[in-house]
Image (cartoon, rainbow, N blue to C red):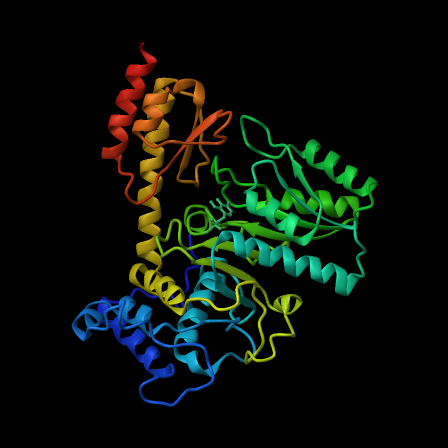
Length: 416
Ligand SMILES: Cc1ncc(COP(=O)(O)O)c(C=O)c1O
């Protein structure tokens, strides 16, 4: 359940949303009204992208796309490029809603930006923490490692490769998808024995394939007991817009001192355009990713991306404001109801499956399915070469009416 007091997050009418965005766009630079010679930015090309006033008036999002604001940099701290100050404000607001009002942060105590997706938000965290351990604690090569689970997303392996860090993944239990404490302790002991002193933990807030959720405090307990320095990043790319609304008093919150940052995708559950992953982190950490060579950028750059679409940030703001906290709560509970319905049918059929009660994902054991069913319903395997599980993700378009024929076909297959 979201925090009960909403300072910023309020449902707005389409008219109010349009008015606010138009106002913010007006505060950005207008290339027709002001001579701007020094930046490599213009409106979208008028020969390709219609600038018809009637069309743009019918969709404020299209208007924002055509205006083409660049949101390079991080706008929750320091200086930013003044040319797009109007729409930076909308991004700042969206970040504050996510950090304070969804993830329980103290107002003004978090930074963040709209990254290109979960991958970038995860990389941003790994990059910041590696640099911190090196710069502030004098960590030598080989003393820093990434710790995650065998169900973690491959973006963590990508980050380990890019940042030249070793990665240790703890094998989860095959049935519960939980990290067994003994396995975690054994991995931590092996890391210590190999000379690791600093640990970057990536904790799953809904895994890609199963929808499982890691025990964040178990990571903290084990690492503290072993005397390792650690920082915890939460990969909430999948679950960030669901879990806090389903689990009251969620431990996945900035009120939990063990957690320093979150990645939350808007282009999954929130149905924002692709290119909208959210990165939020406690104040004081972005500086470890500052590229001082970005001297021509006002405020410099502390993000992995460089130039990025302001229209994407506006889209996230629009979605949040269209639903408001209560509308979003209802939407997540509707998806949860459908997922529960599916899991119940599978229970009744005796079909082996995994489902975390807060997630909209159901993974079904491959042994219960055949190629025709998998193809007809577009199920996705855990491993295309050697599938053991296939998943159903209950998104907005996946209604009980769509799930019913799947269950009926599965029942027929079971009785063969
Ligand atoms: C848990 C998790 N983390 C990270 C990612 C990467 O997200 P993106 O594809 O937005 O880069 C995904 C994508 O499915 C994911 O499920």
